[in-house]
Length: 154
Image (cartoon, rainbow, N blue to C red; front, side, top):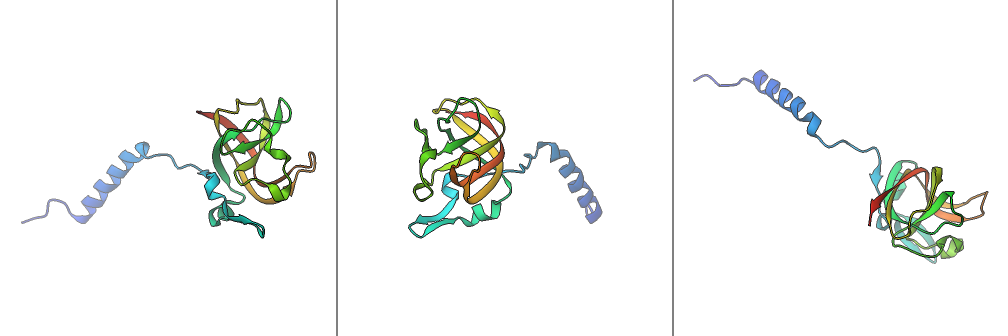
């Protein structure tokens, strides 16, 4: 009995099937979703130890979701992204008191404030480590720079 398909025919059919399904494959994103839980391995009196994943993503584009803390002025090129909605500025803490559930977002363009109860997603290049903004004097541990922001709902 003769086989219905030979190896070359099977490969050709698989190739054609793969080519036909390619438009339906989910698009790969260049940026990864990073959560507040994924930032740190430990935080304590001995200092901050960033997670392996955060260290691996340093310098790369990532997405983070959270809430925009009330900015210091109406329109700004930076804001604090928080895990939960806050109604006061968390930026006024010292380096030693830095909460682990906030990230400073430096924007590409000026952004009007978003209601502190609305969830936003920020996409930018991840920077980790203590850094003092030379213009404001604010200290941060985790930053998204050259970022863009959009609302993702409540």
